[in-house]
Structures are given as C-alpha cells and as structure tokens.
Image 1 (cartoon, rainbow, N blue to C red):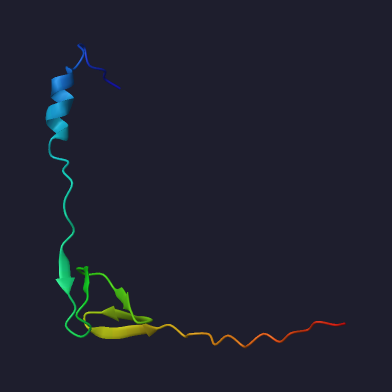
Image 2 (image 1 turned 135 degrees about the vertical axis):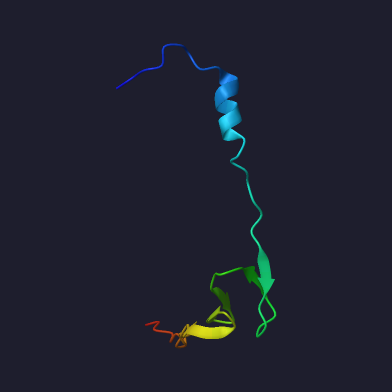
Length: 73
C-alpha cells in the first residue's frame, strides 16, 4: 500500500474538515394536536403516538389498585 512521501500539513486536513457543520433540526407544528415536533418523526402526545397527523399507536394506561393495610396486631 503506498504511503505519502512527505508529511501533510495541518492546514490540509483542516480544509477537508470545514464541510462538516452542525445543523439545526427543522421543527413543524402538528395539525391535529398543535404541538411542535421534529419533521419526519413520530411524536408522543397525551399517550398517543402521532405520525403525519394520524394516531399510529396508543399507550395503555395501567390503573393502580388501592393498597390495603395488612397490619397484624
């Protein structure tokens, strides 16, 4: 495998890396819920998963049974 004959400068690699930039995620407002969410992603609202304004999945809410006092004297 060929190796470089001379050392590459630091500026050379810095020039190559200038194209890597951080971007801000695009946000949209959902038409049905009115909430802000990332584009092309599903989002949760009130225990429902929405995608493109439609309910895709609904989370079941567990009901907690009241605890009984089991104290023995």
